[in-house]
Image 1: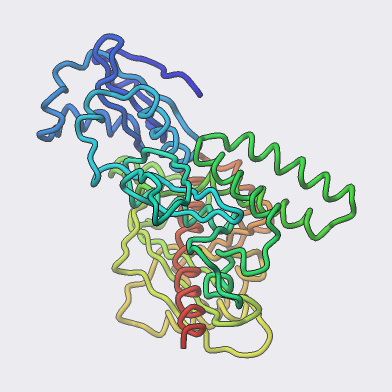
Image 2: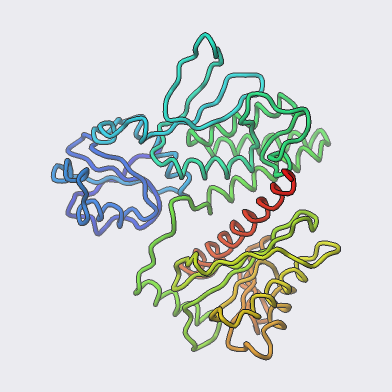
Length: 420
């Protein structure tokens, strides 16, 4: 576990703006430990906008510690481990059944996973032994984290699975009725390790599993493990679970200036729309449109589309349909910039849809494989990692939010179809 870097109370301005965990101390004693997507702003809020809880201890604070993390999921897990290790006085005082959450894992041949407020002891009626991980402070963040990890390591939530596939099986969130016990237990072990903050160990073990399967020429298994490894790496580096980073006016002016440079335009950029398509072999295909205004999501302007085009799945035709339907809504204000999930082909089809009526809208497309950003009227793509950090973060945030919104609607339609 990484160690805190400490500053005095007078050095708050030197705190990082990165995601991570912070500690408020009196001498060597921990008063409070929390997590934040912007450590500096969160710590400042304790002193500037203190609530009745802060007022109980804020005047005692003389030292502030922080640990940066790669993602908000890691921050949430690290916070839980540090609270458990140091038992900060004011975290413990506020602990009750409504404040803290635990992840329960049953000790069975095919363990199931659930979230609970209380650590329950086994009874005569229910002799099932349960292992608990926690405490976690934020129940909503924990639910979102488990939902994300379940896509990588599918798990059971019910005592007995039906003999046929359940709705969660069709969505890739449940191992199904005929899962191999040994492989399932491995996945659960990996999931537990991630929740304990040992994601690096999990990635090393997955790499070993992949090589072993490949050496045995079990290429199907090797591919499955490779996909798990890639998904976990992406989740730990990109996942957002606490809400969006606050972008202030002066920050947006800087970001807008960089965007205008990249797009080679003098026109202002305020409203950005991002689009994504979600489908499984064309089944229940959906499209999403999400909108950011000055770098912040405006959920009132989000729209979703049930794809009408039939035949073989074709993302290019589907994105064309979605954009044409969007442009028919003259009552919706036009964006200054559009971001599409895809490569040059997607970029070209969107440009065709916009011409000749909407020349003022600029277009970019982000190709997943290498995170190459294709920009309208520019021959070669640019690597996202080579762009300023603010642009890198904004583009990924737009892409991930559009994907999340599309896949949520897609799963809703598939689940509805399975239940009807």
